[in-house]
Image (tube, rainbow, N blue to C red):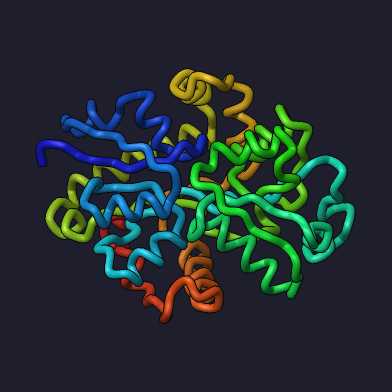
Length: 299
């Protein structure tokens, strides 16, 4: 291959930002890399469908939806679990204060909870919780660019939102917000992102993907230890946040790994069931159509 097209999101804790900042992929693989920013996981799946990208950083629910719609992709490695939190203005009570998830959610009857786009992992989690606890009268407002949720939160247009650790830290630091439900209580082991690749690339260029996953693992290890200038490199790349902000994001849900563990797989299966129940897909998607384990096992 002469070049590699990689889709990524603005999510601070993904290894994509560290790889972009340090130019590891270009230097180590000796290949031209085109990094393409997408608004959300569902948009990235659309990018795969339109043959815009070869590799992507995506939460597993959009991948499942894509596979169910015959988009030729598979998840080849993990990245992180438990990356969705519920944040709100400080006047609302947290899980610790109410004692139950349902108690937290009942505060939003007749109100709106903002979420990244329909089909994103955050959207699925909040809709699943509302359905599971049979709470009526809560509107979920999907916002195309997740980064814009903070603007609406700061302006008082919304009182609560579900999103990434980046949103949670920003809401607490800049908008007088607080975490109501932490990530491990939203959905245990939720597969917040994995590395996804086109099926033809998996079959025809496994060594290229193995080398990429090796760099992904190195970046994951750096994030876990914050060795060297990891937070500094990412903050300088983003340009509008400091090192301390990045470190807080890394710490708020520090479950980073690369291997496709049983917990990661089983949680993904639970999302398949939830997607059917929520009518996002028509039928169950087999695990072997979602994952390819061959390359990550070679690390």
